Image 1: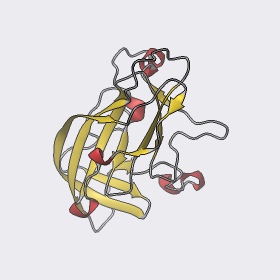
Image 2: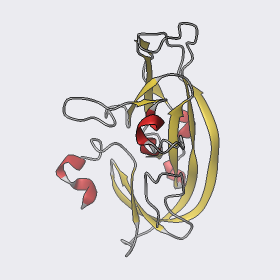
Image 3: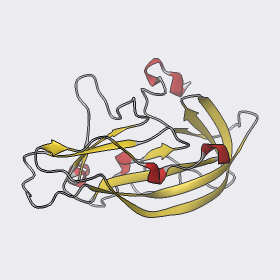
Length: 191
């Protein structure tokens, strides 16, 4: 059994291990049948200049058809000097607190002290067409008037699974959306 947000990127479950996919529609208990490494994918969110931001961009490059019993475990990090905000799905901001929203920047590694650049806190799971969205901004503090690129790198694993018709004795719980989308505020995702 694996753990999400490990310092190094590792499969969250191995072949023949069980998972519980927490989706907006409920829980799906499944057994992992196949795992593949997902090589680096670079997505350009469009040009952005100092003091401005892009529109929300759906990251379709990491979508896999849920109907075919697949999901993705992925991490992302900015290639360029950016600040990134995320939604999953489009209606639910990720990392939202009462009075603020956390963001990801290229400098996150300086704060977590690992020196590894793994960006373990950006790990998310994606299935079907529920959507994962990013918005890039370049605060005025990032002084680079020439570079308007907003590229983000994704890497991780894709899984194929078999749906189980019973609740297995042991399983790893995987959130397929932000906690707000899963109604975790009332404890629904930890029952």
